[in-house]
Image (cartoon, rainbow, N blue to C red):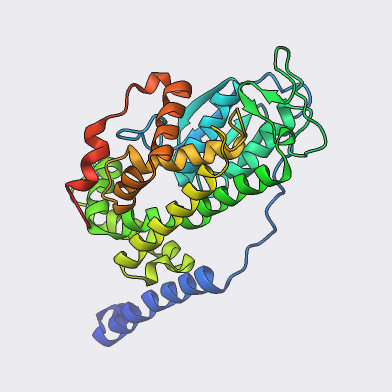
Length: 330
């Protein structure tokens, strides 16, 4: 045994073989191993008797300027829904690594855990309104709510087929196009990532910060590459983001109503507000921000009025933050 450890060739072989085996195991696990089991289906409604429990929303880092406790449009979407629907809730901080499905937001309501903002809203509608997510009825179970309303929220059953289709189309553009464009400009572009670093990683010790930043940014890049957005030049991403906001503005402005839900906000209004507030009131360089401010004042007025009504505790809009994109152009 002693001769083995004194043999430089043997030690060199071990030094090569062990990392190779570990790397091989990582690659097989990462790229070729399927999940051990199918995910559990999302819960549809609260466990009977737990409807009065406080709904706890777990979300990420405090925003610099946004009204919510997170820079994520999905976290802000859920919190906005809770405020508009007047559902009692509390907010707690969390990291993706602590989430049941590896992503935030997630929520706990009594003994029930829900993940993904879409299924959270579905769960809340099913729990707190007779209508749920269907269009068969327009009633609420809560005492004091008007017919077709949940707090100040217009239930989907009050909307005609065209209204609902337009609202859902806007939501799809936001969550499956604009979200990833914004991710690219925040995490992929150096100006945006410099701000992200200050917000999320300011407390990380300097000796390990470069490694942490590289690992996190690589994971984000993998996500953006899988979506396709990272394969394009930043100028192309800018152009596509502006085009998508033009589409959203056209759909919104031609509806002829103050909200996507008509005279009151519907669930998709919560998504639209979250995306607009994230665009307009966070300090990230964005040509789309300048474009929306210049070309679509109706969207800006909508977002500001929505914020003032449902997030009065957030205070007035910080106009210095809103103008910041003009100072750092891509």
